[in-house]
Image 1 (cartoon, rainbow, N blue to C red):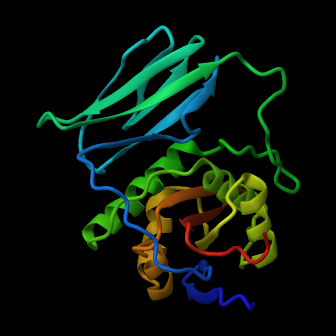
Image 2 (cartoon, rainbow, N blue to C red):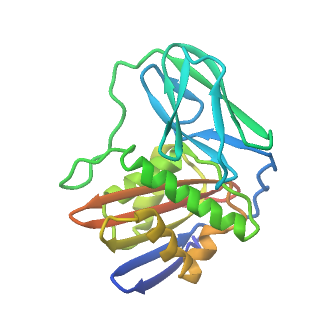
Length: 260
């Protein structure tokens, strides 16, 4: 079987953009829920861990509470909500909006592991899988906002794709490296096909907005960003020596990663 992974390359002023899409079949649409709550690190944390909460639809103010703050506390950091694992147990995290609509997720907290969390260094620089979280969360918000405006469902965060995207951005690629990207997805625990966008630009200010603007202004990248077949998302951002490297991976579960 031959991969038909699509390649589109666009060059903007002082900007490098590349996009690719894995072979796939149609995937089921995500369920239509009033409020969706998910965690960057999934539904399981260790004592002492922090995990950003992804709440949708985007662009709405939410009140977030924990059923057991001694197990999982919630904090608001700028415009984002963060879950903080305090003690072993289970807690329900609920997000509600001004009209009374709400959604929830259950977080389970276990004892802290003996080993430190995995970090993947960038060549010549120290960079971890949880770097630049505020920029990455803002990028997800903007991508989901773009999807909503274009009539497709917003995407929940997938931890494996978040790690995949950050692993790839940490390599500071300026064009797609298909085998390495596909292997990174498998190594992170995502075994299916995917679409991915890459953009590289000079400067570090307004990185999330610049990345999404670049993809929106390039037809191929835009189509990957609003692909209705996708059911989850992960993004990565690396800033090094005044240059910003951004990746977006969108998961397509009914598809094949030919490098798996």
